[in-house]
Image (cartoon, rainbow, N blue to C red; front, side, top):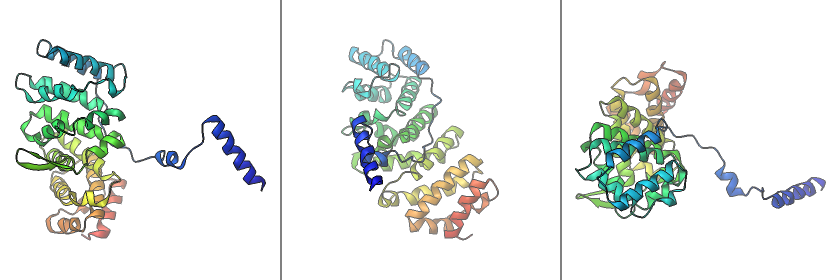
Length: 298
């Protein structure tokens, strides 16, 4: 009886102090596996370069958008400070030929820095009608190598927080240039493009994206639609003799996709190479190789 009274007294004290933990609060505080992101972005330098390259080329309201972006990223105001036309400005810089590739690179790297902030989801939701960000991503292979590298950083960094990472995997569809696409399909395309690229930077970002996708706690039905495509890309990537870090990331992803789609096991057996080729690379790699081998014997 005294224990119950003690618990009640403690709860009352917590209520008085405003520190009582609700079940939902406890659930939110359960640590999740951290995503792999690019944090080596000097935002002051990126903004300075962007301002210089945009000088004399943007309208008055777009100058205001740049001032708001500075407030958001440097003065640490919330994303609410960005006006309704911010994404219109972004789309113009990304798509119009009178802006140089360097301008786009610095803008995208600036967005990659913003992607590390949890309230970037507000900006993403503003793009629900025009899909300007994902349409640009859908054309990943058409952009300059530097733009591709910057965009891969941006998409990797969106996995940093729960809301933006879930946005990347939305399944709602729209039409773009005669194709039916969705956020999850575009995210898959970018990940595959990067991991199979000859560019070391893109390969690295691709392995990070695959790892980030794999650690997401989402319904199996979401992964089932993309698991085979991503698994095939990983198997093709294995032929490039990846370094340990990238082997670990992609093996982690392959093991996850193996759990959610029965077709992945058949793909490994039919196409190969079998992950056993990485045995002995490191302890953590061996653990994943053994896990996969239990389901797909060599």
